[in-house]
Image (cartoon, rainbow, N blue to C red; front, side):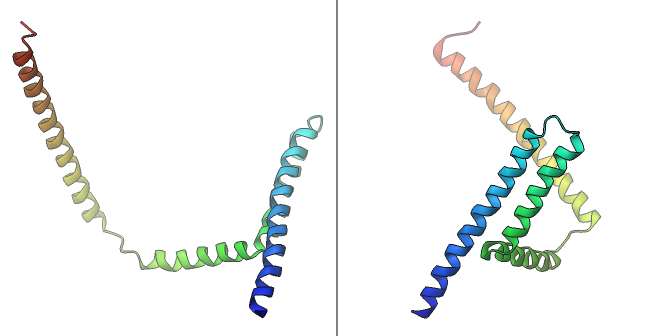
Length: 126
């Protein structure tokens, strides 16, 4: 039961952090347009500041920490991926191109045969 109370409190705080993050992003966008008379770099700094602050607030939430952990885990999994050599890549690419050419030829011939058969059965054509 104590865990449920902690989860409830943390959930409310995380929701507030997410709402604050969205609000900061929107405030940065509004500031960009509200400062129309200012130089462009000031407008971009205002918007960038809102986005950076929103990212910082988001990073402190549970979802932000989970996203960061997912990113770290993804990098670990990326190191486990088998990357083919250049020779293997070229061979597979060649096979794909040949297959596409053969399939294209097959469907072209099939289209011609079906069109001829349709014309012959319906009596249309010369």
